[in-house]
Figure 1: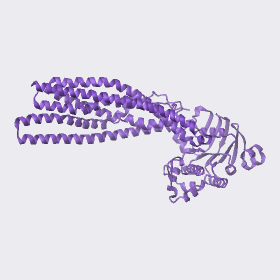
Figure 2 (figure 1 turned 90 degrees about the vertical axis):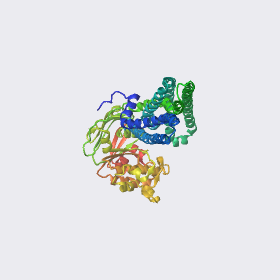
Figure 3 (figure 1 turned 30 degrees about the vertical axis):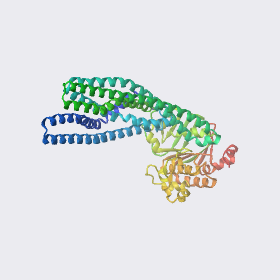
Figure 4 (figure 1 turned 180 degrees about the vertical axis):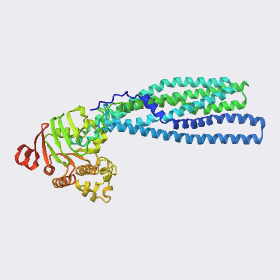
Length: 566
């Protein structure tokens, strides 16, 4: 048995550093191109000032033509650098967001759950919104640097005209950033709280959708709706708070940038009036005061996006740094397909012990539904091996010593409530598209009538959760998927509870025929499935109390007859 992973957790800063490090090539090129864009934008008013000065002095067509050519080069540089720079950065951003989505989803879908207090809806929000906002750091850093380039170029150009203009830009920019840094911290904390509340609302929706039918059954849908409305209202109010903070930030940034631009314009006008700068330099200063508004806006907004990215990274760290309840081993089971349950104690199971030989078809009649569910959970590795006493051996190897991949390749446990996905009948039966036994699985599960009912056959569209299928059709579709996997060991948990008796009888015979020579365990109370099994194990009060064929048990065991006879 391996011990849980105790490596140092990865904080949000490590997640951001990882994102920056593996995209440094794209970021370098993006920074260069966006720097060219901002430099070109800033160079435009500088060129206009020089053109005005030289044209007024020379008054020649040659100077005018050269000026037009210079402006054309600047405009072309601005256009192309923006287009290709943003293309590189957005591609890197999208790719990085995809990487984090896959990583978070992989953690959420691990057969052995991670020790994290988050529901599936919250993990979904983290894998989508938070992954996207974390990846935004790929664009934020180059835009921050390129905006700084524009501010520096403008300050240098104005400083060459008059040192006081250059100093005004530098000091004003520093003052603006100091004021906005305080607001950006508030945005980060508010955004993190908003994301948490939205995630909780998403988790509530996921729970409601899963339990919608039972809620309607006992009239609890109104109470559930009120519960969702409460968490949704909390998320809405927090979103309003974040919007207010963002609005205050944007308004403050715009006002401060306008004040700085106005100060530069007024100072340049006073210097020109006093004769300390010429007309060309005045035109340049006024133009820069207008153009510098955009890079200043970008430069002042970047801290906000950095804080949002950090807040999202911290939420992703909740999933990525959470240690698994147990770490799977690396061994592989021996060929054969035998299954051994050795003195397992978990939930309602008490020293449960039995062996299923390779190629045997065994049915387990559980008198208590909870015991059946506990046994299925243990076999499916939904319960980590150190959470129960005893051992489960597959092919002679304990379950805790096997890798997840080896367990999944060797043994398949199909739950009674197998999920149906949006797609087609074919993609639900054979998601990987590699099964060679799809026709046999369809026939064995008696799904043939569903296929024949529709013109598209196996390509008939299935809605999410099988909304356009009946309960029996969904159950048979899930069974067909399990049979098409053709695993060495197949465990079925109540595979025919939603079908009629005649169909159940046919399914039982077909499954026994298709699985001949392959290890099969069926946890069921169905007389049809119990009858086709090589032997039946009676599971009562957490232990095996009887073992024989179905017909012998019917003849000799009154309790068994009462429990399974219909």
